[in-house]
Amino acid sequence: MLTLTPLGVDIFINRAKSKTQDVFWNNYDLVIWNKNASGYSDKKGMFIKEWGLAETIPVNESGLWKLPKRYVKYFK
Image 1 (cartoon, rainbow, N blue to C red):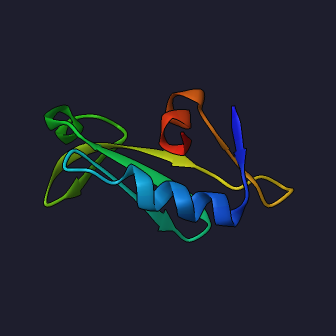
Image 2: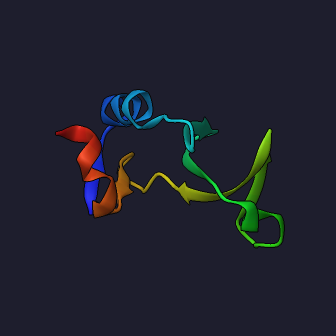
């Protein structure tokens, strides 16, 4: 897990956006959306011009976000 402060989340949002992935705020939650046609019938599906799967990362009690290790590549 990678622990991020609000500044770290802003850096991640700027670096992680691509044609098939979008990252944005939803209140205090970080949402990572990946283009995927199966989002139409999936519980985590979300429509943003196209169907995709959304992963929501909530803020913890300390005011930090715990990002999975697969997103570390955006900080190198």
